Length: 513
Image (cartoon, rainbow, N blue to C red; front, side, top):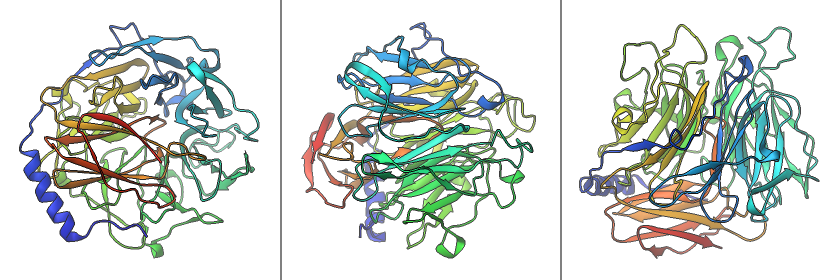
């Protein structure tokens, strides 16, 4: 069994983290590039596009610089070729027939057949699609998988490789059943689980009941080598018994119950982000919603138990932090990342009213919550110049130009896409880590990366899913503060653990098994 860190180790790690953090002070700062690049892409459409609006970020031409595929809703989707240098984030709009699609709500990059070329899972109002990637960003329908894209309203996705399977298990989260005459209220659709057999997929298993899923995440929450499926749901107050869900991925999936330690949580769930925030070796979660966003810490034990962080931690992001609109916020995509490379994970939250919901804020700026020395979060979005008040939906917090600083892409409903380059000064050291393994599951989904610096171990689960309709595939970024000595190891998906190895800070490495 994989174990987390002991209470003594946690206290020692927290002490070292506090000491290291005092050596670094960098105010986050971004500059928006899309406008100067003449990129004007919007996520548009009627009521079926109130939700969704995701973005996929991935390298598809082999130069390590990630391309961008953005959902357009009623408008065509967008493909951007990366032309960046370490000094400047730069993209070019590129017409691509296979990617010029409408009714797209989101997308996730994944190497399904482990051939070294990134494929795309595309979510739609209508048939979902899997496109096979090839050299120089070639994409075409993926033949031979026996995959049925259905005709639902899909806005969430996650994937994992189950034991001894050549192909990943795929989960699709469906929103309202458009064929239900009683909809949209009390008309949540069931979700779809595709399990492989050999080189193709079995017919979809229905995960029922569904409560209008807006985010899915396969996560090995207990670090035992099996990822279960967490579901963040929306319309709880209109569906009897609606709440957040966790499916135990047994031979026949079953819902965890309160008897298993799963605590009933009815919220307007929009997005899931995961990271070991408190450095105890277990993945914590952040859940976006209407009103309070929830940071939940994993409780040590056998069951999937979580507890809310105290309001004083500062992660609730429950109302706009500037302006005159004091109504509750509406959170969508959430993502952890160390924006200033000080060794502590920060948090981006995309905000925006569903449409014109009078109970919630219309002028609702996106959040950049910077983690402080004592583990609390402080709002820096306005100072960092990422505090857009457009109706934001999907996003990606990742390094777009491989300079070691996390950049930001945001998709907005009926407003231009944003590309924010991180130009923060006085940032700390960093690592960019790619994992590769032979045969199936080339990118080692389900692995854990552990980086030790300044006496602190950062533990990171490799996942595909979460957020809101958005995902990236590429190097895993770690902030290091002022550490001069850094080491890392990998617990591979099958449990094999590598030796600790020393790494030079400010390095981009590929660790091949």
